[in-house]
Structures are given as C-alpha cells and as structure tokens.
Image: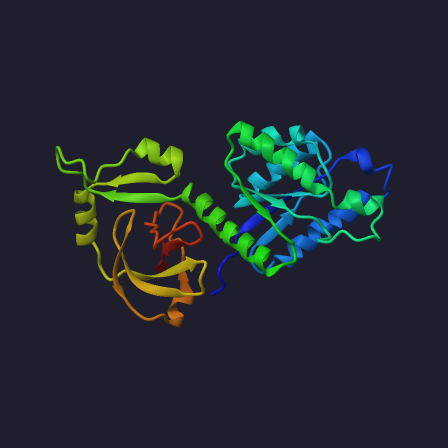
Length: 293
C-alpha cells in the first residue's frame, strides 16, 4: 500500500513592478515554481499558487491552502517582493512555514543581464520576509541551497514529513481509560494546555463502559491496517468489535486478502478508536479499525 505524501503549498511571491520592465516575467517565474514542484514530487505533493503580487493575492492563496487541509507552506521568492504584503498572513497561519531561500540559477556569470539579475534576486525578499516573521515572533524554518541539489531535496523531505506530523497532531484524539489515583500526580496531564500547544484531544472512557462492551462481544471481528508514515512498512492486526463506540485490538495475525473486502466505517454512527504507533518530528503513524461487511 502506497504511503501518502505530505501535501505542501508553494507561495510564490513577486511584485508588479517588473511587469513593464520585463514582459511575461510573471509567466516565466510561475513556470519556475512549477519546476520546483515537479523536481520535489517524489518527497511530497507540492501545490504552487499563482504568482503573488498583492496582499489580496496572498490572502486568497493562503485561504485556498488552509481550506484544502494542506500540511504546510513553502515560501519561494519568484523575484523580490515586499514583506508587508504577506507578513500578517504568515504570522496568523496555522500551517508550518518553510522559507526556501533559493533562486533559479545557482551561479552568476558574465553573460547575465538585468533580466537575469531580476529573476535571481529573491534573496532580498527572503531576508525582508524572514525579518518580519522574526519580529512577529513567528516560528519558521529556513533552507538555503541549490534547489536542484540532493541535499535540498533531503532537507525539504525532512521538513515536509515533520510538518505533516505536526498538522496531524492537531486532529488526533486520544482515549483515556480510567482515572488517576487520588493524590497521585505522576500521570496527570493538563488537557487544556495539551490541546492548545500540540493539539491532541483527550476523550475519557469509563472502565465500566469498556467492560460491558467487552462482555457483549459475540463473533464480530474485523481487521485493522496500521500504516507508518515515513516508511514503507505496514502491518495488519486482528481487531474485535465491541457492542459500543470503540474497538478493542486483541491479537496480531498476518495480512490476508480478506482485508480488501472490509469496510473502514461500519456506519455513520460508529466511532473507532484511533491509535498512534509512534511519532517524532519526521514520522507519524495512524491506525483505523474496521469491521467486515
């Protein structure tokens, strides 16, 4: 089973100042953004925006990125672009931000003319935009390299997977079985601080409901597919369906073709326990339980 790639928006920034000086510069630099997306397609799915020339363009592009539930945004300076047109948007965005300090051509040669200088002067905009985000207290990542190099590809891959993990954490739900012993503080957690900072929501499950659900189990059984993001390994586990809102994972068994005939959701009213197999900055895992049709 193919591992889903992170989905990253490319916010390509320039300005209209150069339109009269260099006809078709917007189309040329838009093509540059598409080349970046194609070059990095094996590490993530990249969705370039239209060239950003005005604040309204940036607002529209960021709305589209967030409404599409992307995992992060890579900012690329297509030419120089004033930071104040995007500083507030980037500061307020819920998506992880990567400032890619790159340019189309890595080497300045005697053959360059003013057009070439304009195509490759994005570093000024990167510096301007980075300074604005630093002053706003916005956390972001910066990569400076030749965009065609293997090192850049590897660094972007690492960041994209980390961004996907961070974004996934914000929709994670964790089942809490039982409660802490009175006066014991070693296993307590501030749920409000957890959901504000990392994002996971804690849902309490009463032990009595769990026991009654286990006792009501008959022959119903299903399969769970566990997929680890960032690797090609996947495994299936035996899951037993309870007469209640959750699924109890019981025994490990080999994969089998019967899994392909199962359904991820039994009904719209059913809820399944989703587990996390392990996550770091670049790796996450999701589990979903299913019952046979």
